[in-house]
Image (cartoon, rainbow, N blue to C red; front, side):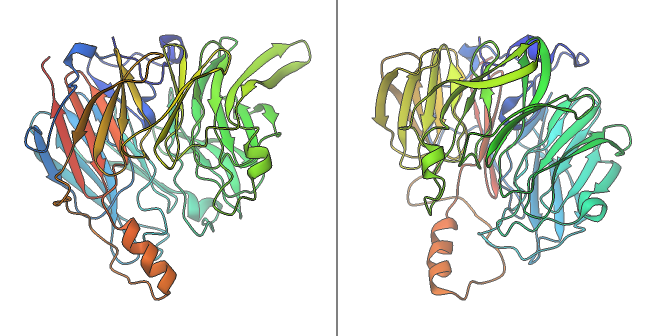
Length: 445
């Protein structure tokens, strides 16, 4: 059987039961159904893809799946003024509908600023898409708008020069969004039924792009945020902050993920200027939170200064923790003790978070090459699978504006290449997404 980020069923025991359909309902598969490992393809090539589908505009979000539908988001226009939500059929990739809405906070489109980076959510009632403009849109599965909410109008627009990218999580009747910005930072819960705010908890202003995650800690579901200088736990029903740990630094790009009972992974990077180097070296590891008579106590079980993450979050799978750094080096550590198991270089780095499926670890390379590793203590590459020929990359819609600074122009050329941003996996299918294209690989169900 298949385990997404080793989330246990108990994590979602407080949620209403979804219909018995295949789902990958949110960022990193939080809340996803199990899939039969034997149905998930191991090998593919550009000639064996089941289908591909070009997408208008550009999006850095991951696809989500409910039943036979795939939902994706994008932005379009010189000022990202058009917010787009798409539905495609999982079976053959046929486009079913597009919903377009106007941004309430247009800003110049550039490879340097997020473009539809937050991954949407889906449940049996609808699709909930949050954009870095602060707009939240709810649609039914047929593309009819249910409600909209502008967090920028309500609480002020973001000021982060590189944009926002935190993906929301869902708990019961709430969509929960983390906005960590230098002007205003907060965690907010929105009612799925009508778009009203259920609660809002202010946070210390900061610059970060990490997403919150759901954890079960001492039998209680919590929203855990690891973001630029702290790791914090919140009650998803009320927004109350339950605990905080501030002896961390450089934790601005990855999501905390489960690593055993009452444990989760935290990852950090010193950043390009190295200003977070000292604390970042102490901020890669496994954290636990224990409840005592005097409240919650968070602490690291172990840390390791060696692994430095890319945009891909580290995962725990079958007792091992996996980090992928910016150079494409895979670090495998014992999740219980932190002991090094192996350190090996992969063909490509990854921005999408790896996924464990059966006896395999799928590492979705930034430039379209998926490396399949054997799950376990021995480093073994089982397959290397390309999405496109090296000399024929897919369509990649570029911003309409041009850079004038020579350094930014050079960097823009590098960032203009297609990037594999995210993945969704259900029985028999792997769906991957670049900025302007969807890919589906099919196994046998």
